[in-house]
Length: 251
Image (cartoon, rainbow, N blue to C red; front, top):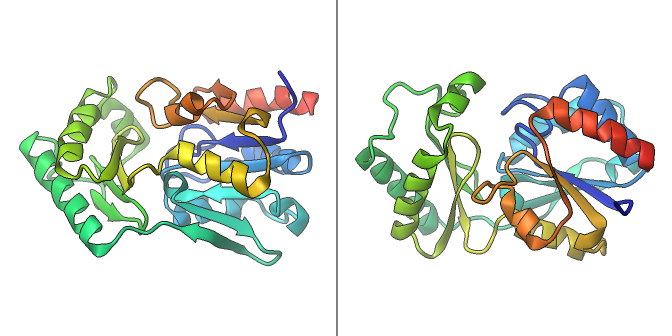
C-alpha cells in the first residue's frame, strides 16, 4: 500500500460506539496520526456530536495538529476546519424549510404505513440537523444492543428508504447507521464529502485511505469505496485501533 497523505474515518461503529465519545486509545491514535498526516472524519452524525464525541476528547492537542483535522458532519453536508482558535465551518449545505417539511412528513408517514414507527422510543425519532434530516427508528438515545438487533439484515431500512425516496425524488435518501435513514440535498453523500476534501486539500483521492464499518454495497460508507478511495473495512472501534497500530508503523 502506498503511504497515504490523508487518512479518513467513519465515526460511529468505526472510531466509537454509536453516539459515544471516542475512547482514550482512539484519541491517542488520532493525535499520533495528526502529527504525521492529514486526518478526516465523515459521518451522518451532526456537528454537536462531532464536538462531543471527538473534539472534546482530544485534550491538549496543539493547534498545528488540529489544523490537519478535517470534520465533515452529516455525511459531508458540512465541513469544519480549525482556524487556530476553534473549529469553524467552511461550508454548510442546509436544507430549505420546504425540503425539511417534505422530508419529515415522508419519513413519518411511510414509517407509520410500514409498521416501523416506534411508539415508545428512546428519545426523538426525527431530527432536523440543518443540512440533514435523520430518522432513528428506536429514537436518538437508543442503546447499541437494541439498535443492532432491530434490523440486522438491513431489510427494514432499505424498504423504508425506497418508500421515502419515491416521495421526495429531488432529495438524497439513504440508509445510514443501524437504525437510521438520512436525507440531504441531492448528490450529497460521503462521496461528495471526500471529493470536497480532495478539492480543499489538493490531495488526490488515490492518496487517501478510508476506514469504515459499512463498506458493503448499500452501506453508508460504500459511496467512498465506489468513488475509488482505497478503503479498509473494520468491525468496531477496537478493530480500527488495531489496524491503526499497524498503519502508524508504516508512516
